[in-house]
Amino acid sequence: MLLAGPTGPAEPHATTDGGWVLVWQDEFDGDAIDPAKWQLEANCWGGGNAEQQCYTSRKDDHPRANAFVADGLLNIVARKERFTGTATPTGTGSMKATLPFTSARLRTRGLQEWTFGRFEIRAKLPGGQGSWPAIWMLPTDSPHGGWAASGEIDIMEAVNLGTRSDDSGVAAGTPETRVHGTLHYGGPSPGNVHAGTWHRLPGGANPADDFHTYALEWEEGEIRWYVDGVHYATQRADTWFSHDRRGRPREDAPADAPFDRNARFHLLINLAVGGNWAGNVNETGIDERAFPQTLLVDWVRVYQCGADPVTGRGCATIGPDATLVQPAGGDSQFPLPPAP
Image 1 (cartoon, rainbow, N blue to C red):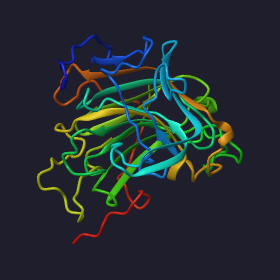
Image 2 (image 1 turned 90 degrees about the horizontal axis):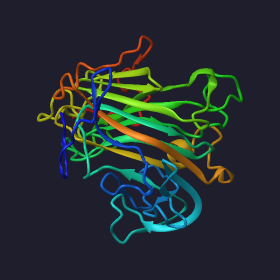
Image 3 (image 1 turned 90 degrees about the vertical axis):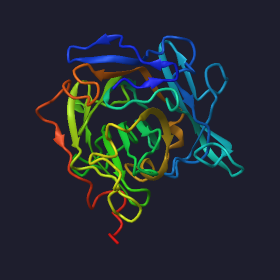
């Protein structure tokens, strides 16, 4: 399904061997962030996770820019500096907060949204205790209700790369190298749940040391995650769901909601600092000495399936060893509310 942007339908530019048609891209070859493709959020809300950064709109040639393009790369920089801004997710209102770091969060909301497709991002991730880079998607219209009843798709997240891993399955002192792919769904908070898994690069390579390609394929009824072409995880519609605040299925929602053919999702790329995940695992807290940290993005490319643009099916890249992620259960972020 080729969704219209503000100036009309996206035109295909190229086709991959797998039948994916390129419909949108940013190669970051200019000298500034393209305002026709990206918005910069500005707030000191903390992301709903007690994160310790203010997102600023300082960009391009600003002397302390948190986001700029240079040498063909998007730079998102988290800096150790106190900053005061609006403490709401919209960046409006009179409530203020002062936080000890600044960073940037870019999104395509209102500029371009998609339903189904393949999303590829080549990036070099930051490291250090407290760093939390994310490449993800949110619903623009939230048709099934507030977060996470209308879903969230996390293409890639990583926390504290290079610090001591807290994974009990590796030897003590092993560096943290995992990248994660996750879906959030269920009902409005606190009825939200999540399910996902993680992937390690071959040979214990650290994603903060070099560029790697993070991708997600989303078709009707199935979502798949990839790193450098390796298919490592799959989730299917019989494991996700949308319900109301009382824990009841939404009568007007499709069976495969919230990631159904009526959904419109936009892309986000950001670098958070600390918070309820990064600040509570590995070596815990925030290592201020590790900052500034930079998330580098070489390119972002969005494809849609030429075989069937309406369902996104027929172009799947399937690997033999991918994990089929089970439904969210007792290890979810929040339990489901009791049925009435």
